[in-house]
Length: 177
Image 1 (cartoon, rainbow, N blue to C red):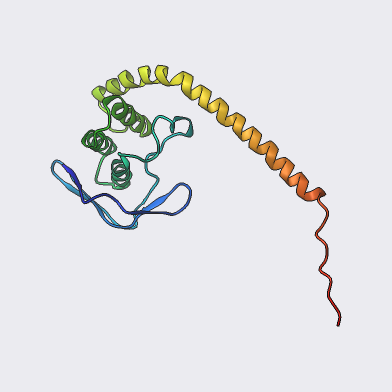
Image 2 (tube, rainbow, N blue to C red; image 1 turned 45 degrees about the vertical axis):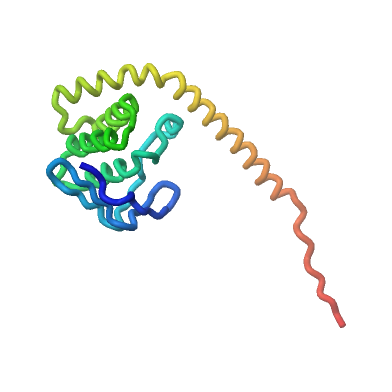
């Protein structure tokens, strides 16, 4: 159970999305998944206030691309896609707390589709301490992101105002011979 090759070769489409340039192959327990060239991904969908803890890409980039791909298939259930994601995180050596927080986040993001009572209990068991652990830093980061946005807005306003009040550039003078 592992990815074949050195990893995906991707190209940036815009500030949020990337495209897989070469096929990416993952050998699962019983199936092989081939992510085709041209598949579009956003890597890990992490809220901005949590990027300091879990960046959008890293050692788990291929796992995130595989998860996006599996979620796009109608033949793989959401619960199975989320479980394969967690298994990939383990294979890449992601620490147990981070692995389970990431898995709980994707399970919550999928609104626990296909979840049994065990999944729900496990997500609750992980989510509650995670929320307590993250409450203060996320609040601080969010407040400072908002303040930084306000500072940018003020400077943008001054820049726009400065352009309006600046004297127009002089007209070029034609030399006559």
